[in-house]
Image 1 (spheres, rainbow, N blue to C red):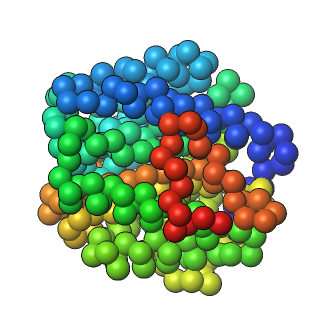
Image 2 (cartoon, rainbow, N blue to C red):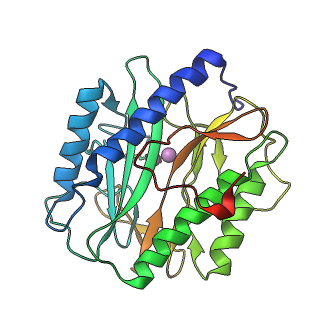
Length: 267
Ligand code: MF3
Ligand code: CO
Ligand code: CO
């Protein structure tokens, strides 16, 4: 198996899938306030997907050895690293929440993106973690161009994170995406420059670093999905789906509600 190169029609189909995934996040932004439950967030996302004519890639998703995932999206609160299951517990002021949306278009293409939401006023530490994780994602994206290697992306993220005393979760990574949810390659968020697969125009993959305020160690909860930090420190994640272009990159999961690209990662 190798990394697929999307043709012009595939790229156009991915532009659509990814834009729609981003627009689901735009639709919930105004609702991310104290008192809303993550189950209500899940329902809002499901409604948006229905309006779009897309469907959730996560609902019923069942990799080998896992129970079927029960949410239309993942909602990961505070020390939950990823794959948090929507629940009836209201969010409170000071919580930080990742909402991770993956849609499938009627044509069968996947778009995958996640953002952090700050619920009401958050601590300086929480805001700093969210902002630095966002910047680390963009630093990784900034590495993307033909001839660069996957290790360049991981290294840029790891170096930046660790220079700010944040740790990089190792067990989960970005991934190729297209007519399947998770394709080759694995996009690690740590690594050595100049190593790994060489990037070529037409490749499409996600970059989705998970950074912790404390140690990088994680554990899985008994529900078979939820991943938390072992030391219960806060964790943040952002995710974009990115196309390798002849000259660099195109971020496919942009939408009007996206936070602007930070200056430090401008191409
Ligand atoms: N959207 C996640 C990713 O970025 C995967 C979630 S799988 C689920 O790769 F089953 F937990 F939803
Ligand atoms: Co995702
Ligand atoms: Co992903």
